[in-house]
Image (cartoon, rainbow, N blue to C red; front, side, top):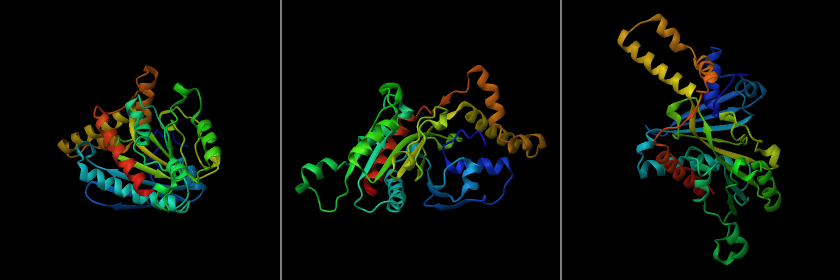
Length: 311
C-alpha cells in the first residue's frame, strides 16, 4: 500500500499508475472524463472489485471529481454553472440509493473557527431545511417536498465526542434514508486547492488525508447510504515542494531544451524523499493558500446551491 497523502480517488489512481509505470486503466477501476467548458471538467472513477480497492486504498464505489479552474476570480455566472454541474452529479448519486421522497440529513464536518476546515459548517448555514416545517406546519409545504435536516456536529477537540457517535444518535432518532457529509480534504496538487469537488457514495474517514484519522462515517457504521462531498483545502509542505520542484525543472528544461538528469528527476515522484527530509525537523506542515477565505466563500456557494438544487 502506498502512503497516499490525498483523499482524491483520481489522484490515488494517477500516483499508483506512475509508481508502477502502468499505462491504461487498472484492473478493477473504470474512468471517464467530460469537459463541460474551458473552466470545468468532470472525471468519474468507479472502483469495481478488490483489485482496484487494494491498488489505491479506496472502497468499492463511485467517485466523481469536478475541477473548477480560476475559482479565485470566479464571477456569479461561473459559480452558478459549477453549482449546476454539482447538483446534476449529486442527484444521480442520490437517486441510485433512495427515491425522491426519502429523507436526507446533511452534515457539515469541520471547525468553523479554522478557515481551511470551516467549509462544512458554513455550508450548513445555507442549506434549505424542511423537516421542521413538514412536521409542524404541513399546510405551508408543497406536496411532495423532501424532508431535509442539517447539523454541524463540531470537532472532537471542542465537543469531546466523536462525530460518529453524534451522528449515530441522530440517525437512530430521526431515521433519515441517506446522509450527505461535507468535509475538507487533502490533495497532492496545489492547483486543486479549493478548486475541486469530489463526490463519493462510499462514506468518508474524517482527517485521513492529514494523518488525523477519526471514526469512519459510512453505510457500514450508520446503517444507511452516506454520500460524501469533499473539497481539498490543504496540502503538505512536501507536496508543495514537490510541485515547485516540477515547475522549476520544467522551466530549466524549457531553457536548456534537453537534459537527461533533469528529465530523470522530473519523471520521479519525489514526495517521499522530500517528506523524509522535512519530518525530522517538524517542517512537514499542512499549508493553505492566502486566498483561502475567498476560496471557501466561493466553494460554500457552489456546494450549498448544488445540494439545495439536487434535493
